[in-house]
Image 1 (tube, rainbow, N blue to C red):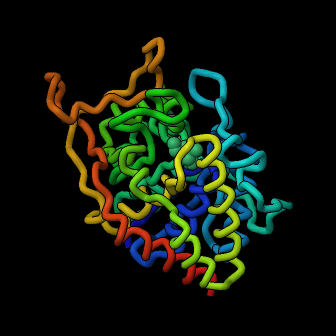
Image 2 (image 1 turned 90 degrees about the vertical axis):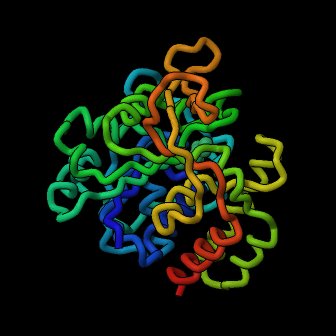
Length: 310
Ligand code: BDR
Ligand code: CA
């Protein structure tokens, strides 16, 4: 299995990403680290621990990381994920323990302990990963690659052109992109190919376990948010797509392309600019997801919920 650290800001789709990363035998999940994003750090951390409770994930450390972006005020997304960040689920004090270390120090330690380079899957704002590379520049050679849910080759969501994770910390996204560590960016253009339609939600409900029931509650809430806030009939499970790519790369066709993060645009700050048509003289510097095989993606997620629910 691929050694993986999952950095996230749960968030409904982050919760599904945690379940997939913990369940699938292709991944050896070394840690779950949290960052401020969809909601504040105290909530994203509590939610990650709560998801571990619900899914029976034990032995995977959960550590809290950066509580604000590198260079701007926090921007949250509770209109999509609910005030708690986990939609309708009641979130009391979790049983899963909180690691004593800061997420960035935990990642540093785990990278040092791993015999092979570690894949970081980052599905929230990139603050923790940029901070890791600032604080421990030597760690860049210990990271196999950073697989990111972030950006878009098309338009945005948080802003007309900027996707939420890159908009929430553009400097961090830019620093990770330019770090020299290989990066793969699965943006809205590809995650919008993973739409949780009613038949999929029904197939999860049919599993009949408490975890499946919690996932159905989350996805039903999320579907309603997407209908009202984002005006699309079915919700995309963005973050699970990045995890699925690490499990099976053949699920997503990628382009090796030139990518930039817009840091100054008066109306476009936080947008990613992918030169898919080769209009610039920029060298290719990143891989960008283009096409998802949704028919093979969904069984992975459903099977993960089945495995952990058993
Ligand atoms: C991203 O923003 C968050 O709201 C989701 O969890 C996902 O990581 C989608 O733009
Ligand atoms: Ca997220």
